[in-house]
Image (tube, rainbow, N blue to C red; front, side, top):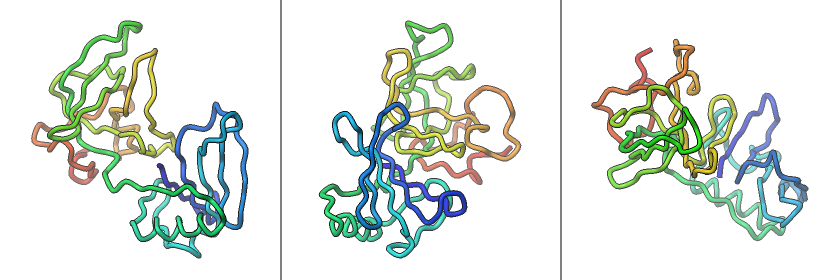
Length: 208
């Protein structure tokens, strides 16, 4: 689940996004402060909008926000009060982490994409399809995992690129909106001392 908040542009509304909704025909049902966005075809929940959210919890930040367990409990109590049986869940794991490319093979249906196996922890790795010209085995970079919202507002969910599963994105400095980011293609290249699985910290990991 991606939690997003932008009081200036949207108002005092917490948006909770479960999956990409653009290609899906959807409907909305609202009870009190809570609106559920669901797929017209099968009724599955796609997103929640919680209005006047500051009357329930304190939300800090703009764009993607991260809520405490106690905040989630308060929001779930509001959903239950309005008759919704589903509950919100929030991962406390970072969604932007240091990753290292361990394996890389050419995509069978592309002349520029590669299928990369990327370590994101001591015993965790994910498959990411990438077209970065500087991608190479051993390179350490920043990975946006499913559940991340990019500075541009685009959302990271599991998906497919030309038929191959991809579970995240290796990021360029420009995509991360880093200061003095070079305006060219290519993922960020970290020093080999960067710790795989560590949460991304611009002050630590970017020297642009």
